[in-house]
Amino acid sequence: MKKIKTHARTKISASVFMIIIFTLGFLSINLSLYTNKQNFLNDDPASKDFTKNLKLSGSYSDIMINDLPGNLLNWTWARTQQWCTQGTGTSGDPYIIEGHTFNSTGGIGPGISILNSRKHFIIRNCIFRDAWQVGPAYYAGIHLQNTTNGLISNNDFFDNPGGGVYLFNSSMNTVSGNRIYDSTLDGIGLNVNSSYNVISGNTIYNNSRYGIRVMTGEFNELSGNIVYNHTSSGIYLMGSYNNTLMSNTIYDSKEHGILCYRSNDTTIESNNINNNKLYGILLNDSNYAESYENWIYDNGEIGINCTSSSGNNQFYENVFLRNQKHAVDDGSNNFWNSTTIGNYWDNLTGPDANPVDGIVDAQYGPYNISGSAQSKDYLPIAEDGAPRITILSPNDDVFNETAPDFTLTIAEDYLVSRWYKINNSATNYPFTSLSGIIDQTAWDALSDGNITLTFYASDLPGNIGNAQVVVQKDTLAPVITIYSPVSGDVFGTTPPTFNMTITDPNLETVWYTIEDRTPVIIVDVVNFTIPSQIWNFVPEGTANVTFYANDTLGHLSFQWLILSKNITGSVPDFWIGLDYFIMGLFITLFSGIAISSIIIKIYHKKQIFK
Image (cartoon, rainbow, N blue to C red; front, side, top):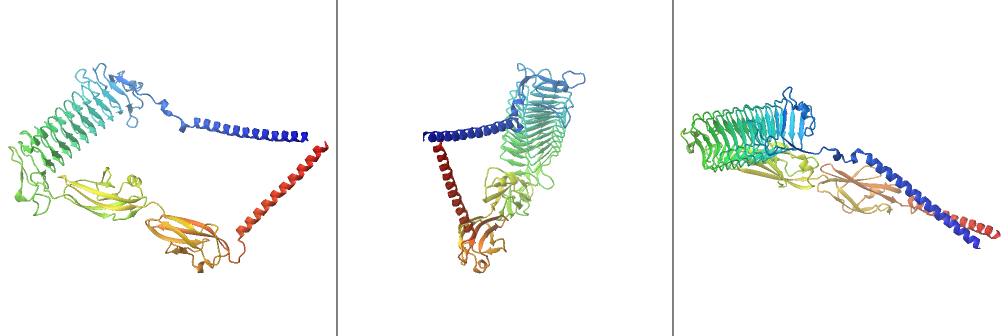
């Protein structure tokens, strides 16, 4: 008997050993697969950190590029330097200087000076500081001389005693999106016949002289700049012609917002000029300027001042508010209205009764301009209240994933701007046409439910009108929940009753099918019972019952379950199949036990006889 037990233990040990070997093999295979996966990921470009290969930014001093033929420090040389990262100098492939710090050695010299260049280049995302004048011209954070086709954008210029950006005899360049502050001289200077340049979107402040200075330049565009807190004037034109100053914000100058000296044919349009210590706009020995749609307010002495040597200038659709004195005209032949409209003066705003045309009635005008010219505004703009907005569409409507259209009317003679807000958020969405589409990206970010759209409009005097409408966003299909019966339930001649809910704020139609037969519309989904005349035609056995629901926006959902119909009393096929399965399982189980017992007995007998 000991032999039998020992042999049994041996077989058990062998079995355990085989299980361990199998387990170790399984783990080994999985470990190998994991290792291979990690190797794949390591070789996958999407999983690598490419930032390791980026060139680090550096700090450089006194860079000078002179592209005259034969000069060794030309663009070809610059392209070999670490601070010039790419480009061939064409319009499609400009030289690029990006992401570095430039200053001058010991505070003497420029940051970057580019001379005699016609190549295309970009200088962006750099820092310029401590640049100082060397000789008559080579100074400032960036200095361009006799240079075209440059783009200077998104740089920081500060603490430059020589100024931020200076252009000398340089045309067709763009200076955009930079921040320029704390210079001892000017923020941006355009000198000596620098023409056809664009100076836009810069923030220029705390410079000790002028924010932007243009001397003897023509056809330059100064637009969208924010210019404030300068020792002299915000923008200064001297000996310059045909320049455009548009949509700039100019304030807190210690002298004037805009100063034009011996500068003719200047367009001054849609600027916000306020809180300057002396004048908002000063025209000194300057002629043929056109000034319109400017907001001129809270200036310390005069809103607009025309000196005795300034003539043939025209002013209309400007808004004058709370200036110490709105206007002074000592010149000649200056006009303070167009043929159809004048300016808004906060000390003459009405009445406008006969006719109602947005102009102060003639018997109460004109508006008298101070000064020796004895000029008059014959068509002063009347105060007629806030713009009146009517929303034609949408109108309490429901919308899906696509943002709604809108159509408005706005009753206002002198509109300045229009915008809308969504759910009273801080974001303004400007629009120009009286019909349009709500911003799709903003609509996508909104949750389903009620959404408030508020439309605004402002007029020249600054009145703001608004109107709003509440719409609904619905991007979800109806939700069908069937509580009873459940799949597998058996019914006889009595048809099933369904306890269910269908949830949707804009539910339109509910219907069902049995085994994909003709759909039947349901009117009342609460405790709905399949009509007998329909259930009677369902054959015995299993039947697929599917419920559908859609909403007014076209979203569709469905829910199904399998029921059994048994009228004869026989066991349904499903349960018969289950019985056979269980019976077969038991037969197999007991057969296995019996066979195992016989084998064990035979084995024991053999061991005993041994």
